[in-house]
Length: 368
Image 1 (cartoon, rainbow, N blue to C red):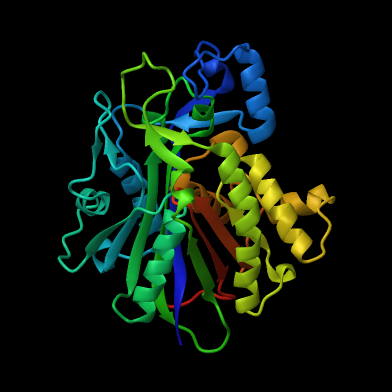
Image 2 (cartoon, one colour):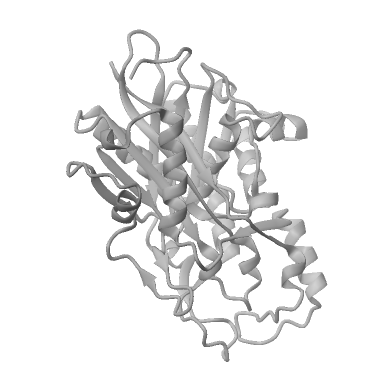
């Protein structure tokens, strides 16, 4: 049976570390365009308590979104030991393309996937570049598309990248700006014939609520009416997103497990999009409740759901593949993934779109 197997992973984190004191000199406004009548110390303290974000990464002005994706892609290719000319598709998940460092103009022509192919110097004319614009769940959705292509025998090896430079589209006068970060992740997914056992991508699903939910996360002008530097600023209705996530995500994840004939006890790790620590914990708590598990055991929860948001912030499409690669490379002790382990990956974001995937690692090294 042909299975879709992760043969390599990679990620890139910008070197510039932005701590919370970076925002002490900012002037924050509310949705009515009025200055918030609280000290920045209090604003930052409350923000950090909710999100747990103490640090985030910002890219420098000489590096573009497609550059970060290319770095992560190169690392995934090296890890996979697959020659770049053997890649049949490149699927690049992102939201804003390459952003100009001065005008902040979003550039999507040519596509990010085409730029990644160019920067990797892939000459194969049959290597097709696709962009995946799906909000924060873009990388998982790219993996879903790749699995369908591989199972249909349209491809043998597919490179899925995820990258975002959210630091270039944040409103410096919006408290929510402190959530966002930059980064990139990548994976190579390969079609491999497996005799016996059930490994690789086991099951997945996506859900798209695009009615009133469409406006929960959008772009817009600055909250400060006098700020004219950029008209493209990410705007988030945090409360609505939080309520939506708690209502929809746990039920969907259980549905995926049920359809895969699995139980939560079969899952070694849940790699969830690093959006907001409070929200992620609440999603896990409700998922545990669906299985009559107690969420009071904090050690159990921390072991089941590793987190990077405290140090890396929310880098949109890049959070899940970055988390995966860090664990696989042994850079997130005590977390580890062993041969035969089954994990769940999940994400939610602009749209609103949500998705989840169950993946089981092979018990032994497979021949490509």
